[in-house]
Length: 185
Image (cartoon, rainbow, N blue to C red; front, side, top):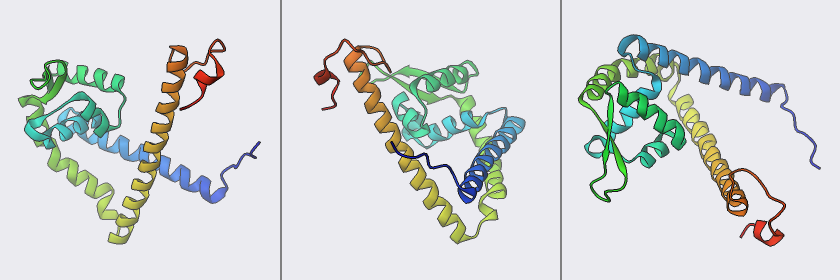
């Protein structure tokens, strides 16, 4: 059995600083958007991705991937945004089975009003506080951690799929299945 590797003082400080920065930045951005435009940061992210998409529409799975949200979170959030008149969901014309998420004119008005001040807030809180070298380092670190999280998510999803295919139930293992059925391919 591998011995537990606790964080040393330097690692602990880095971890806690990262968490404090992430939480503080998220709270700041969310507060600014809510106060100015009655949008949450999550609303802003959805609308920003839709505004950048071809024809202002995306399939839910595409939006989920861009936001790094699970299907349930996306569905619930889109439902709230739809109730507020910010987005709509319409049947996909290409395959007639799925849906596409579209920004409404109200959503478009709000993102256009919010974007300039949002950029100013991001500059004030982060970008303008860093030298070009620090910004490059921050980008490299963020990309490296994001890539690792993507890999860990894929590994986790593969493990969940294996458990589900063996037992028929997500996230559980069954002693009634044969050892060969439980082995990964």
